[in-house]
Length: 239
Image (cartoon, rainbow, N blue to C red; front, side):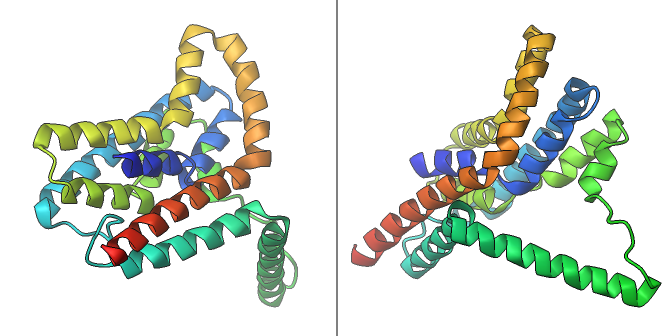
């Protein structure tokens, strides 16, 4: 159960979801756009999760973190998680990321010069371009696309299936998982409903903080995920 909740918290800061919420909070009419994004995301995420559980049944294994037959997977996942934590949490790791981004940008500019004779103006990511239109319908669609199950969600679904919970318990866990995963959208929505003006001020401060600390947050949860996977892998190996 604790592992599933940890996956849910990690999913709340998954890059795709984090990017979508961050973009919306800096746009006009953020409350309407955020609500549409949230509804679209919840509908798809819960529906697909329940479908995967139904299809998988009691023999599901999407690479489950609780699989006792494959401790090597757990230990390997822990190594990957620790590597991700180091890359996003350390100065050296972030420098490597920035260096990679710089080289990638240079290669892209070189291709543009070769093709067009000059560097073309860089396009924003499709998420930004879509949400910039201020369309509630497009925000709804973006929520559906960006919130298809990610790796943490798949791990959690596999753990739920393997634990052989009752149907009611499994459905409740999927719903609770998604409520936790979407907390960065839910908290501002509640605030906009109770006190729109004050919430807008807080959202602006939070957006700046999130932009500055997003990688550190990912680093912390990657480390926690690595410790949990390492513990389960060693336990399965010895047990």
